[in-house]
Image 1: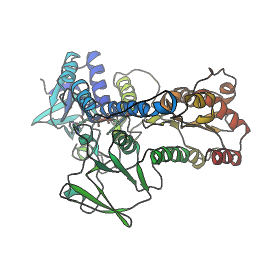
Image 2: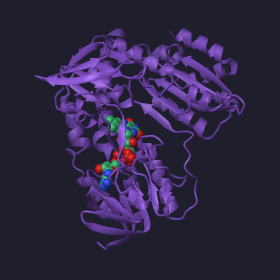
Image 3: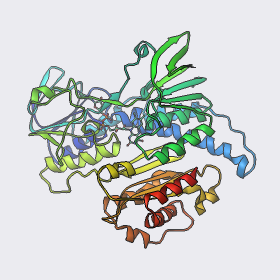
Image 4: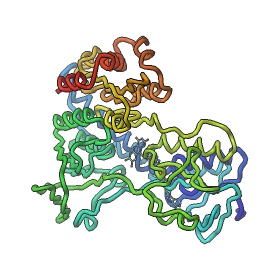
Length: 466
Ligand SMILES: Cc1cc2nc3c(=O)[nH]c(=O)nc-3n(C[C@H](O)[C@H](O)[C@H](O)COP(=O)(O)OP(=O)(O)OC[C@H]3O[C@@H](n4cnc5c(N)ncnc54)[C@H](O)[C@@H]3O)c2cc1C
């Protein structure tokens, strides 16, 4: 390998892999570097294995619902098929040979190692110095964040990386962190028969989402027997003879295992940012609308702080590739970032929450409807918990945010993402035809609420939701 190439990609998460592959496909000489597994967190420890676990958990939940609507059922959870599917089908036992082959076939030179900027357009890896004629793309992603709780570091706690590799389940589990990862995994393990306690320091779980969505999910968790503790300070963690003790407020909770799901730490220190005139202590890398951080330096993925999602990493990869190739195209735009928490009910949301819109000074009108009372929700019966909430900019007559929670909430979200992204006038959305009886028809009802509602009326609707 020549020491001079066109582009060096440091970190091959979903976006880095896409950038490297596309640029090599366009004829550029590309080196891709990863210190762990090509593809990053998503295929090996994140999205894919966790969604396989959730699929199993949801099948169990549906099986348990049969007696209420369709006869008899006996459900006997078995983690074995889930563990095998993750190990054999998803991750090839956490081996990236196939991904490396795919990369090399696309023309990328792959180097396994830790890349570090030593000067502008210059990366050192394994004692070798690579000089990039065009520039360097950073996609170094994140690690699980572990809070500085007294005693925690000395215990054998789990992170998502342990949770997705389990072959056997514990009797009881405490999950610290009620965000997307914590809630998804808490419900999954609970549905497989693990006694789960979920602790969140904020005053509600899935706190970045609408309060109505948090309330909905807490209600379901309560009914499913997941103990949820919110607004709680954890002051001490200890581990003795196979059991964790966690001091939460005034109480001590014991569990066989402890899963820490308290967010992510960006991989920004140790990659040589100081050698290109940047501060390595920044919370995230500031990029322009073409993903440029500096001359000849691009950043994509979680480290840009625009949303820790695979679809953001891939989206930004497309923007960066166009810029590197000197092509025209739309600049990065984050008004309509969709996100889904894959609990049951699934919480899909896009754009701003009501509070964010108010804080931005928008003249807000909201419409909310209960999915369970919509025709399809009522037909669906057990498992129909859900809602649609729309946040409208009343002056502009467009949606600036929306939440679709319930069965297929993430799928209902698609039309709402189009509406926010393309600024479809709410008058147009109101004049559309919505298939009967679908879950997405609840969007029409929520739109009617926005037409009627001022905030006070929306509050009444919410109060009716209980
Ligand atoms: C449990 C869990 C579930 C998730 N579920 C979803 C989901 O359903 N949907 C969704 O959109 N997102 C989900 N995510 C988030 C998603 O995994 C990330 O947003 C996604 O992986 C994009 O990350 P990235 O491109 O920034 O890089 P990452 O995937 O974090 O990869 C970064 C890569 O860079 C490498 N690296 C770091 N530093 C260096 C260095 N100095 N030199 C060389 N290599 C380096 C690492 O080894 C790694 O391979 C989930 C995450 C977790 C943890």
